[in-house]
Length: 135
Image (cartoon, rainbow, N blue to C red; front, top):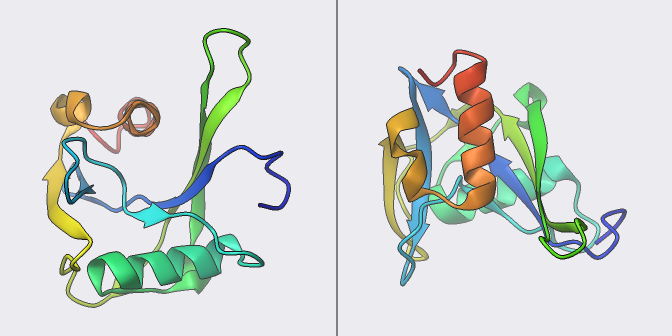
């Protein structure tokens, strides 16, 4: 897990189009998430994002275009320690954005849909809204 002090991490893709952001929902889960996933041992953020987006959406990330959107963390109520960390990037891509077998559904959400995503994803929605990218 590298330098994450044992904190669970996800590398996520933030794709915004026309004031909406791409989200996915895994099979058997009600909540939507940004596409992406956990790092394999020794992988960089770019390698993780490229692999996960290929696995989930059958699309290829152009890692040379990756831009860090932010790193977002949820904290434990009892002691304030980091509970989960999500490292978010934008990037250009090629491919169809077709959900794989592990993804039940993909959708484009506006800021008004933020209640339908996970707690850490809501932080990203808020940041995108504050920057004017997600009206």
